[in-house]
Amino acid sequence: MYEELLNKQVVDLKPSGIRKFFDLANTKKGVISLGVGEPDFATPWNICEAAIYSIKSKKTHYTANKGLPELRKEVSLYLKKQYDLDYSAEKNMIITVGGSEAIDLSLRAVLEKGDEVILLQPCYVAYEPAVLLAGGIPKFIELKSENEFKLTKEQLQAAITDKTKAIVLNFPSNPTGGVMTHEDYEPLIPIIKDHNLIVISDEIYAELCYDGKHCSPANFDEIKDLVILISGFSKAFAMTGWRLGYLCANETFIAHINKIHQYVIMSAPTAAQYGAIEGLRNGQKYVDEMVEQYKLRRNYIVSGFNRIGLKTHMPNGAFYIFPDIRKTGLTSVEFCERLLEEQNVACVPGSAFGNAGEGFIRVSYAYSIEEIKIAIEKIALFMEQFK
Image 1 (cartoon, helix red, strand yellow):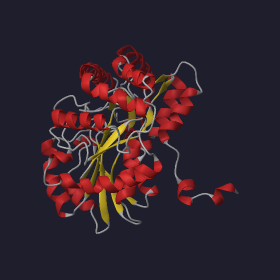
Image 2 (tube, one colour):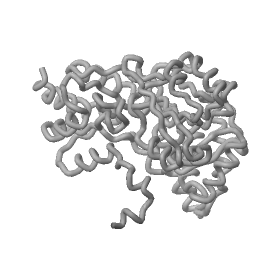
Image 3 (cartoon, helix red, strand yellow):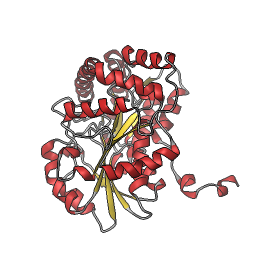
């Protein structure tokens, strides 16, 4: 009865496939979970201290809508130093409530009802609902494991229609760990420019690149003003619960995106912003240490999964692997349900990330080597029945 009073689009939205398996795992005791998409490291203490000091100093009020000027300045310096990206702290940036708000703001600002948005599957679970809620129509490109989940110019060209308005990119990728290098992007740039395609680039895992430096589509001057760059502090700075991100774009985009931000949020959390300032100024050594640990874990878990017969490509970014489970004859949901039931190990079905994820599972290595070792041993026992 009450559903009739709600927005039909919201009623029709599917619940997150990730949350479903978290809930199932939480109903059992002794579960080893390889499903969580967040660092297992605590936020570096110097960041926490800076936030605590800001509260003790009574800095507990709203900040400027776009965020603290000091924080925007530090983000601007950081992007230039780390990725050779030039964004003005005053004209080209908004501090947001996590990368999630930035994605929502971007899509709502650029989409008219019926506009098509290209999404690359497998993809982060929030993109499709965000497009739908903004009145857009998702159009999917299926990325291939044999191509290390990269986007090709042929795939992009074939997906564009006269209704295409934007494309959402996420490299390094959640869930595949795939990356795009400068050489990978080069063939795409003329296509994006010719079609005046808005690029919403979610780069929240930018710091977690293991074999080469991160490249952003905004590094290409020809299309920089078409790019809305989204990132934040959740992954690299281990600040998931602080809910702090940022959005960079051309001055016109920023002016109109900020109007939505003003009305729905006002400003990002104040204490979190002071913590982020400290992180950008004095936290790089902690980021580097965490990245080194993730690389060791990546190498260990990829070797382990391939050894037990679950083919896994070597991801060059983020902290996920995306093993191929098709040889078992099970769907990804069946595989994860049975693995949880029989061996108390929780992973996420690839189908949670779209139809292109079927036949795969997402496994996070944001866990200690000891936990990963035990999980691999249990999965090896599970795989014995499929030999």
